[in-house]
Length: 89
Image 1 (cartoon, helix red, strand yellow):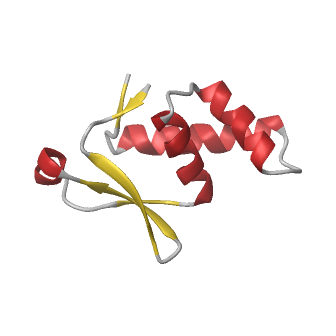
Image 2 (cartoon, one colour):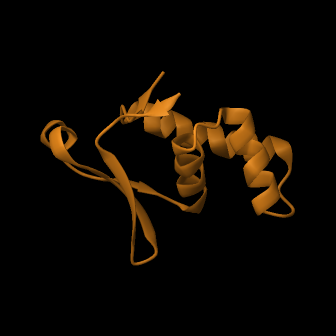
């Protein structure tokens, strides 16, 4: 799983936004908003991590979050990115 080319993640006044650039901007009109977890998942995918590795990273970052909750959060973000066609397999 990897991010589709032509997208960048930016912090806009504390809100994380995926913005299309170049050709992607011509094909996608709009932006994709992400919360803190969404940003962490995005960055994990950008680093080449798989789903399980992203979950483990989140568990280290957020104390008190259990594995099942982290996995559900990661899958929700991945599903959102797939729905918006921002991921390539």
